[in-house]
Length: 204
Image 1 (cartoon, one colour):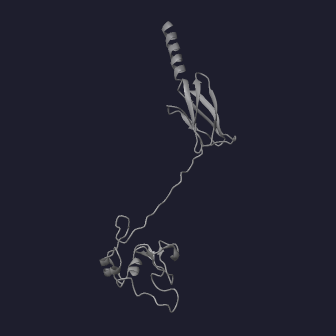
Image 2 (cartoon, one colour):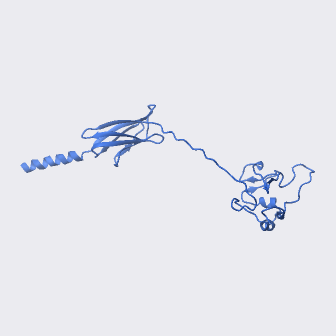
Image 3 (cartoon, helix red, strand yellow):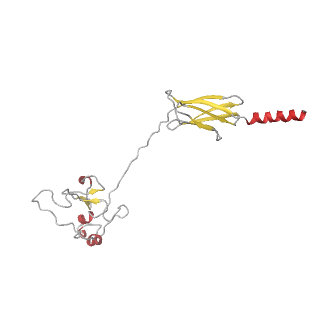
């Protein structure tokens, strides 16, 4: 009988030690609005849950003693609260502050290059390239129209480079702007025949 009582007491003690404690509460923001989908966990453990559509949560844990309950939600700062978990249910409410993300300015710079500056140029054409491009008649402007993404549309003077408008793309030869690289926009005005590659620096 005595052994039976001792076994019963030990069983009750073990059961009490391993008993799960329920943790309940709610999650809101500073304005009192419900935060659904917030994560609530016991720090350093796998015990936790997610707040429901009313901002409430409830879960059980085996952790005992002083513990930290952590609440986190996208767009809000993470909050930790210390609680003492013993044999009684724990009630804890969280108020999360909005986390303001400051975007840093992004500066995009670009440098100019000559026809022979191969360190910066994405596409460098030698005089031989210009002379041997089929249908270009050894004309620099005619070869430019054959580059990937470049297209002359209708009677416009400029090029469409991957879309956009003809006036957005400019052509420079040895640093000089070529206003009408393909033809003169004014009728009855004499225009050049072609830009021969041997006449310019970087292509010879």
